[in-house]
Structure formats: structure tokens, C-alpha cells
Image (tube, rainbow, N blue to C red; front, top):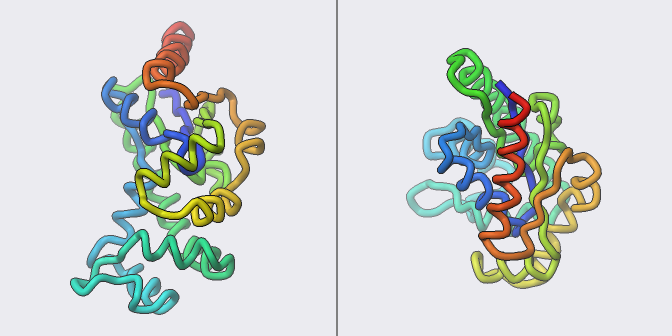
Length: 200
């Protein structure tokens, strides 16, 4: 089974590519979803997060408010590093476990590891090749402003704290440019999938 690493910075459209691949019945190991499960109600990690970030990032019902967490950690490198240390190791472990479960089933030719921090967490060691989704900076900013209703400066702060697009491109085997239309995006993804089919 070939494992494709899929990554991209905020606003690039990585999740759109992942959803398209899922529609094609390709199994997706979603690191973001796994991270949400780690911080879901009842998770022991929540106590550590509360101790680190305080009660303000939690709703009255005890659930963690991800946007409030983001606003706190992305403005403080020390808190960001501490938060990532709490959550990343467990997320990586679960990603690897899910990939191994797909391998053991023996019924899939391909699986996708969808991970925004693919390179930062060393998860490229689990993949056969890596695809990076990228887009023009202004397009990324406008998408996130429309989606999350946050300021341009807040978005730029997050982008600057992530691995740069240039570095991701250097590390990638293939770059998907999502600066255009959905149809243009899907054409690129289909071309990569057809290439993988031809290799089998």
C-alpha cells in the first residue's frame, strides 16, 4: 500500500483536496481529526491544557474552544511549543497506528496521511511520497478571513509561525497549486492519481 503525505499551510485548501480524495474512496488518516479527538470531552489531555492555558479557553460545558486556543497559542511561542508538546506525540502515535491498520487489512492500494504538520512532526517517515497544497498568499488570507472571521494580522501571525511555503515546496515530491478554481484543483489531483495508477 502506497502512503501519500498531504500537507499545506493555513488557507491553501489542503482540506478541500483531502475531501476530494475521500470521495474517491481513498482512506484518509486525518491528523486534524485525531487532534480533535485527543482534545474531546473526557480526554485526559484536557486537564493538562487547562493547567497550561487556563479556564478561558473552555466553554461552560467543559469543551475546549479551538479558536480561543488558537488565539492564545499563536501569539505566544512558548505556549505554542508547550501545547504542541502536549498533543503532538499522541497524535503522531495514533496516525501511525491507523496507517498500520489499513496496511494490515490488505485491501487498499493507497492511503493518504492528511497532516498540516507532516514535516514538522517527522511523519514523512511514514509516507512514500508527499504532496503539498499551496496558493498565492493573498488568496490564502482572503479565504481564512471569510471562513474564520479573524483579522488579516492574526492570519499573518499564524502563517509566519508555520513552516514556510518555500520550505514545504522544497520537501515535497509534488506541489498542487490551489490559486485557481476548484476544477483546476481537481485536474491536478486527478493527474497525480492517474500517475499513481499507472505505476501499479
